[in-house]
Length: 237
Image 1 (cartoon, one colour):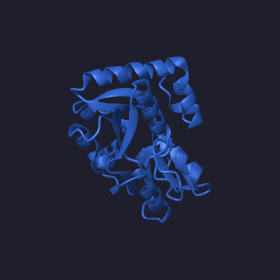
Image 2 (cartoon, one colour; image 1 turned 120 degrees about the vertical axis):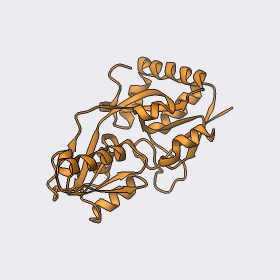
Image 3 (spheres, rainbow, N blue to C red; image 1 turned 180 degrees about the horizontal axis):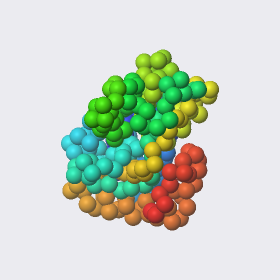
Image 4 (cartoon, rainbow, N blue to C red; image 1 turned 90 degrees about the vertical axis):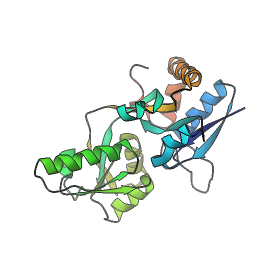
């Protein structure tokens, strides 16, 4: 039997296509494959646009979402979550920080990118309103389909910065030596979860137990070390 997982393959190091490969790789892919194995299943991956990924789950195009999905109050009304990582938001800029950004408040008056459908984009929408309410220069918000498009836009001077989760932000800096840097990281922690349909109680419960077991038996920590994501492990799984 197979288990189908929806993922937006463009969020390294969680999910991405390695060069010259059509098979997805990344932390989420390894985790999903291991969870399926422990359930006696074989994982199948459905590459799905992030802005439509919850709709795909609800229409039963897949059984779960494993795609670096932030756990938000709004999303919790739509799906059930099994939390497996914790994260922060980060601001990426060109090396040398020519826009002189040192905090999220410095984004007022700047052209800022974010991935459409993401919690990062929702945060920027709120900041657009805050800049206006505080009578500061307008934040110009631009949406992009994935991290690769955001990175290209920044490096080609289409935007001054982009808001991204700290995990792919660190990966982007590593993959673009001497070209990018992280200008600021939010103090607020957010949680990343595997999403299930709200009526799929049995699968949700089974995976919740497995994630806890993987933290207890050390296999989750080994996987985190392999992808250099140990700082993002759950403190209280």
